[in-house]
Length: 248
Ligand code: BTN
Image 1 (spheres, rainbow, N blue to C red):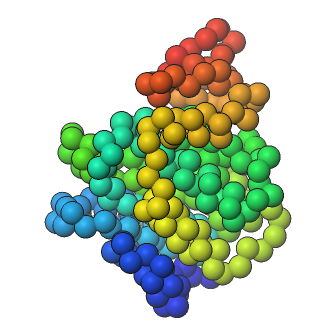
Image 2: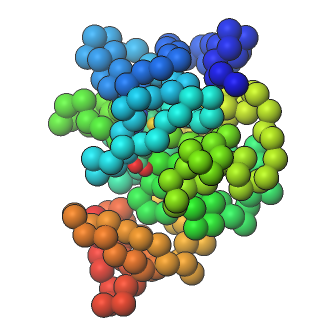
């Protein structure tokens, strides 16, 4: 199953007149391509989509598994006109995906969790993640790369990962990815949130992770603990065996 059959491309372009959407069957990384576009056409709201990435990048220099025919790989050149901080940007895009996923799959209400600072989980397995990159130091424009596992099955997934299909145990249909992307892009245009609202929603959607232990990373250190508080500056307090740790 290939994402972005011609009819899906037309559908996405029609529902998203605000975005110039570039489709790739295979690309190194949609974030890398987005950076090239931003440097050439800085004011245009671009979205770059790919069916497969061969150098998909994750946070902290990790790679991001990006097989073909399965998942969502999308990057945006986001015009940060609201002057969101890095923490708010992380929370904002995680919140948008959370809401779009719940609209499409209301049964996930119990299982869907946002894990600080921007991961999307189904219970204790990672469904998706967000990689924010600066174009320059001003934060006026940022590249927002998002990966979500939709149809991947066990062989394609890292041990801590899951996909919608794997979790729900059913076929989700060919148009699942384009429908989710369309809803997501629509929501960015229609629901710009204030910083306080973003923070409140992130708190609410990450609440369920408070009763669970997750692995968090701070600098080069990994540790396990449960989220206690998200502070106003976007940092988090995690309760570990050694006590409370505040991570930025
Ligand atoms: C994470 O480590 O949690 C962030 C993963 C971000 C992956 C996405 S897939 C689309 C975009 N292109 C990339 O190379 N990375 C991001």
